[in-house]
Length: 336
Image (cartoon, rainbow, N blue to C red; front, side, top):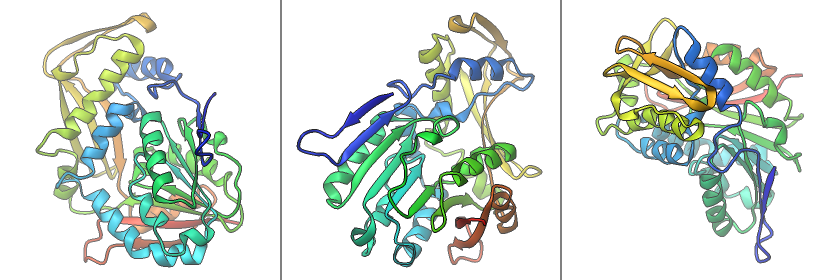
């Protein structure tokens, strides 16, 4: 583990690094071997989020077609003052923190300086966490930042011990990237980090009109396509593979039966790929795809079931006030 502590002039910053410098996980080799050997080839979406991928995702969040970030932020702005005054957390832990832009809404609540003492951003990208942390320390003099660079499938136990009432954040609808059995396991791990009085606030993309959902993953500027292809670039760099990312087409569609968006990479021509570090060769034909991400959409009932299966009680589902709600924030407490 690498530790980056604050300088002599700034003792409020501490970052623990459990991944290498690019955020490429030690498990990449095993994951890629398993995924590319399957009948339906797949790659884990966690490998999107190297520093470049994290920056591309930040661009996605401001695209006109991509409603989740704007809708979630509006809900967050509507509830923040009441939520922070009621919960009065001593610390906020954010899983998949990225640039921490939405978290600033909570940090800027009028009551925050009275009770909030620490922010713990947890992300795979060391660069983006360090950059965000340095800005937060300047803007919020009352706050200490303890960053954790890790993979939430393997490093949740590295979240530092709580120093008071904890509010855990998992925003952006990222929970929808996990398949049902993965969600239950993950949420049970999160539950183990919370005590009586703590809360989990989780972003959930809601079921809505299909065209609106599909447009969010097929933007006209092609940023989502570049984000999708970047997973191949990450694997080229991490495992010395020879994928030709620009020779793959981005394909995203809504699977209504499973209530999920699926993102795939489809070769425009036959691809012969060599991955020396795995001693692996494969051929991918135009009729095949590599499944890179799922993004499940939820109803209030499916949210309640999901949380209940992991030992949580759904206290409230906050949504926008439009007739067709776009996005929700589910506030949950550890069940007795």
